[in-house]
Image (cartoon, rainbow, N blue to C red; front, side):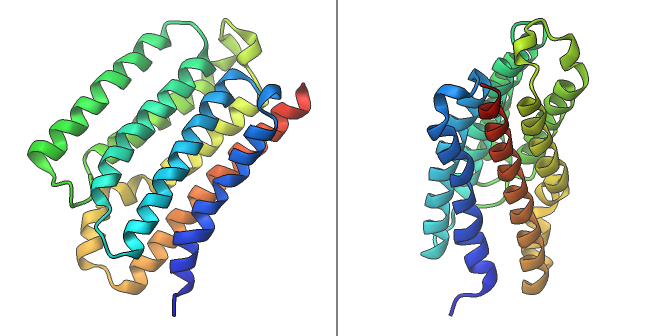
Length: 216
């Protein structure tokens, strides 16, 4: 018989991605370009999460998938911020992150950390980059040249990213340690907390799409 943790991690939280996805598809013509980009990110993330859940359910190590998901995640979020910030000096930094980070990930799983263990070097780095750009968006958005992109929905998305990545940063760093020394109960608590922050992030995205819909 499956535990609550198994259902929560394997079904409930991955399914929560469908809330912003369905809302984004229904109101596609009424949301802005950054949210269009976010929608693509959510759809691909949903597919990857489903594959990961199926692999875990069949007792297949899905950590190689995490290494490649880490690359995709950073690229997708940076692509979102490229549209959210509009044209400006920060675009060059976004492109730099999109080029340098995948290279670091490849170097990491080629020479440092196996594809079959948590990527505790690159995943926290990716989180820090996303935290940085989310913070910058909230801090400098009144000065953006394209004021049409300064939206409440953008603040909601940035808030969702900050809640998830800030709360999960130390888990990303110590995942291998926890995996090897923590008891099953502690692991369940940590992963349930992590999944809850993922759920909260998706709810922020859902709220952002509904807010943008109501503006148009």
